[in-house]
Image (cartoon, rainbow, N blue to C red; front, top):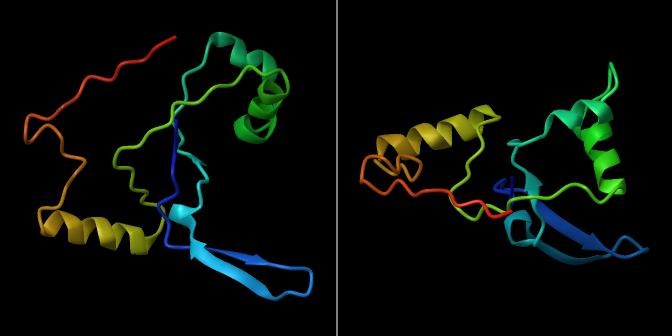
Length: 115
């Protein structure tokens, strides 16, 4: 699964003379990030040798073979990798702003995957 980045970083565009041309929010960059959810066939292990990393090694091999697809997710995706992100989520929870609690309002949607 991939999702647009949610971090508060900014992308800086500059030229060969190091003059800044543009500063824009990473979330508006059009880039997608690995959301960390995967669905694999058992054959994934054929592409992963002992000591190798899934993303840096096995998935790169699948990219070269044109055998890797993604599910672009446009819903709420909030990371909790840093203390600041945990505070943000705690604050949202305290205010009742919990878009991840889809079961509370009976809005649980069925995920439809097409092959």
